Length: 174
Image: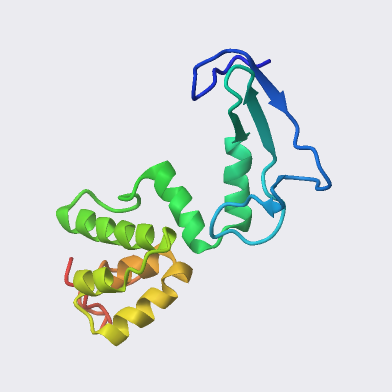
């Protein structure tokens, strides 16, 4: 029995279960449970609990094992999402209105893509680009680094000089 109560009935008679069946590892109903936007490899092990009062069964996973799996197997979007959960959407930016606006726009597009909703219209509204450009940018979005996303929204990359001697420096927010 565990000390954690049942999430449905708050009963305290809860048993810890091992997944039994022809599969080994973190399998449930024949499917590997893996965080979205992660490649193959070992997924974090699951532990199941069951309430002896109401019969509810629920899985739990070690949070650090889940974070490790995302860091090692996740694509760029998954790693950025983890970083945003840990440090917030305004991480690595100064405390200014322009930086907050850009970070919020990037977080909005990230959330739309992560939830598998089409962000093209919203991206076009935020950036003011053509439909063709919006489609091309959204298609590439999951593989873009945070710095590339910031640059798309007009945030100057740290490697470019702000003194005007860099001909490529044309960011509107400086």
